[in-house]
Image 1 (tube, rainbow, N blue to C red):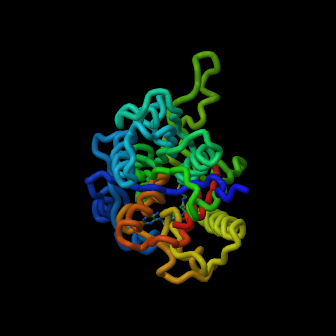
Image 2: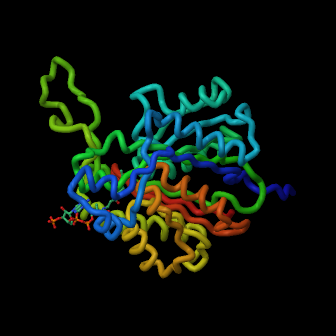
Length: 333
Ligand code: ACO
């Protein structure tokens, strides 16, 4: 009788990158009617990074290079690239194709993006986990990258103060050892898309006139902040509970919860409802703001490098974003 374990997956390495240009709350005070005190108290954000002449695929490639080196994996060993992003360089090619070319990954491997806004990294992780678990790939590069500074309305104080740019990446590898990615869960509710969206470029052709343009006024991100706040708390809470229950775990078993960094008060509400201590919840929102799909992998990279995650730890990721989308993952490190 064979004693071989079923094929599992693990995070073999991680990396992150944020543009060097720091934009503080004081800098934004000079642009819209806001104050450092309001932004800090209502969001927890003190500064964010902003891309200067850097495209999403470039920040993504920088994070991915670090992740490959951290995993001790050669570019030629990667057989899948999935990037979570809603700010690709172009409508097509995908960000993943640009990364494939920039890093010299093997031609012929599948490379594509997933669109799930701030849940993008966890959606990408879910896809890679299933490819690797199913045997269709052995080593996958999973990236979360966004450059929201190009899609926020810098005249709208209710949104422009919230976001920052950056990228994070992990290598997901097949394993027959203990631990690794225990499970992932991804969800959406398209009925509520108007709570949080970015129309983007004009989408009408000369035959249909202007009436099919999704938003004739502005291409920028729009958000109903209050409503989004409440749904974010509710859905992220249920996503954590789902992934714990799926693995027979309790909140007390969590070594580190890495929530999407959208607002310190959202994270605080989730922490309180789960009864977690400060040491169980990771936050770096004060330094990066909301970097959308990049937020969890940047936080993971910082947590690993600062020694907050040790072998055997139970790490839980949870995210919420436009779509609406929400997702979670549990890992035994
Ligand atoms: N500076 C000063 N005042 C402001 C600012 C600002 N930057 N922004 C809004 N205000 C004002 C409002 O105009 C309002 O004034 P009024 O009372 O005179 O009308 C007052 O502050 C309160 O506004 P609220 O919107 O009620 O403030 P709230 O406490 O809800 O905080 C925030 C707003 C920070 C946006 C919060 O609602 C939030 O974080 N929402 C969730 C964001 C989120 O999770 N997004 C999901 C992920 S993003 C993605 O997927 C792309």
